[in-house]
Image (cartoon, rainbow, N blue to C red):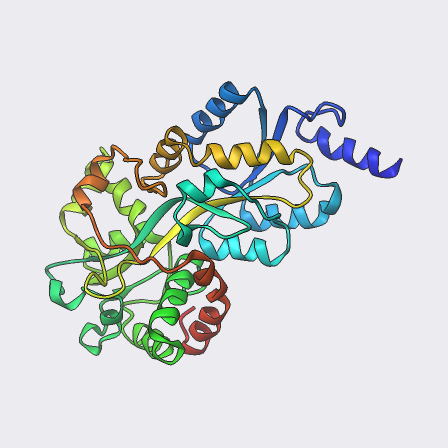
Length: 337
């Protein structure tokens, strides 16, 4: 009796009755983009399944899922960055999903047995040609070169975007080389890490530093902006797809998984499969200037088209995610905070 009452109380937070959840889907999302509204609406039109959604920061949602336990009404968890998906997986909240459709449409290196990637973003190098030369910044490794002393801007080393890059460097170059790299990055700082990726791009444009690392969608936003100040910043910088002659540019993902205590598992799997459809891939990726994970799907985005094609790292996303804790320890020792 107590469990039923708890379930009813939790379901009421979505405006549901505990007895009327069969044709509904409850999503906890840490991804907040306006275009996703159309994504959810089209799923309901196609399936008749109503979507109830709670949006918050990933840590808040994960704590909520943990606290709710077996009585959680949540069916699907959506977030960005492999390190965050790995953190969720480590908490044991996901249930394995076996789907021939997902396996056929999403490349193997962009999925695990417990969660799936639905869009990708690249970690690009942005530089000021008046301060550094293009040949100095063609790889991530070069950013630790003493020749760039006082030229590097970055956000916090503890941020998931940088930790995921560190994890990739560990997988490709080894832990010792990555620690040396992190120490070199710290030695080359133009200033202490602060702000987000857009702040790094603006700092490069302003000449506060000569080079920075940023996720591609932040650059694409500025490129697509109609604001004069954004266009002025873009005009002063150039972008590089790093490591084209070696392992390729580091990519990260937006992704989702079904929760092990999901009360609507059939609807959850349908939704995960829907996110891999041509229609959903276009919305999911375009919502944040990203790329679809399904190779055949193309995105009509002026900024991404202008940035051009590139060789992407194909490191399995699960391996990348598993190495993030080691990257954090290395960055801490190097003083990259």
